[in-house]
Image (cartoon, rainbow, N blue to C red; front, side, top):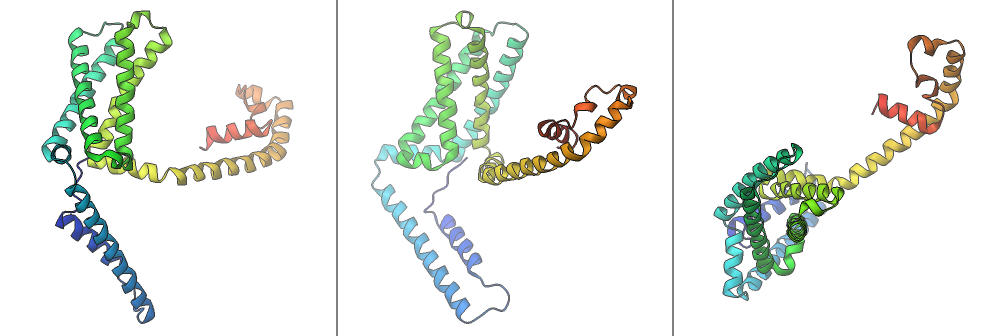
Length: 269
């Protein structure tokens, strides 16, 4: 995604406006609470101003080449060009996967185009590393970009050194699957997808606790089902009820806690 100058007046005004909106007291609460919020807002303003000044001072010490690289990777034309390149690359990846699934050899021009696109990706990441330096790792999407491109470069070098026909079948399939990871770069180039991806990463901890709660509830009710429902199922089995329904799994659907959890997952989850 396009990076904006954190020291620009628009960015500074936006950050100040956000801080002011957060500092406005709700309702009619006045007095000491209002003064405390005012002090907190002032401290927040001071911290933002200090951060902006520090960023401006740091960029003032950059070399001309680093400043030019930073300006290039944050320009609108550069972001649009990389977005178009990613879409074109996805089309070629889809074509290559379809050909491989049909047993058709990938044309040489497709391999050449993929190599050129990978070289452009490598140049982009190199520019960002040169411009951001240690700040490169502060953005998780830039780290994802670096990981995806690194994997793609390794796979490409392995295929160049050892042809796919000489690779074990499993490794050849893994190499083809890893090439599809280029699609992940679309998440970092389009703002809407970037916001969704950041939201998913931030919500991952909550999702994991939700999954844990779901497993505990399933385990709890599976114990009850094994204790109280399984005897009824056994009585129905002795009466030949399940044979009339031609249900092979029904007699053991609640035969254990694990089977009960599986049954609940199949029917409810």
